[in-house]
Image 1 (tube, rainbow, N blue to C red):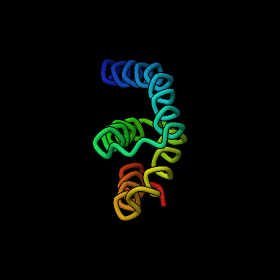
Image 2: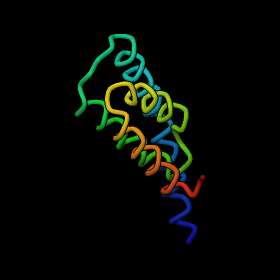
Image 3: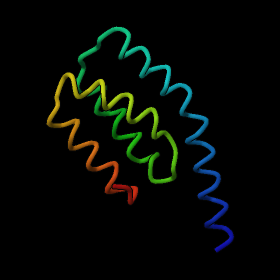
Image 4: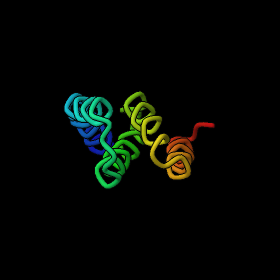
Length: 89
């Protein structure tokens, strides 16, 4: 059990270290008004995974709000998935 807890803590630390480059990429997408759905959805998928360990909620919400301007229905589904996966309302 202790080994599992240690591995989860290590994983969370790696996610937190990855967050800065992801945030920079999100900034670039938003500032350039990029509309690449595969790129945006790929980042949202990563952030969905991160959210399960309590990492990246702000980045997820920021990118998904931007995505809602491109594809409101899918952005709504991402929001629903995020909160279902993380036990939030």
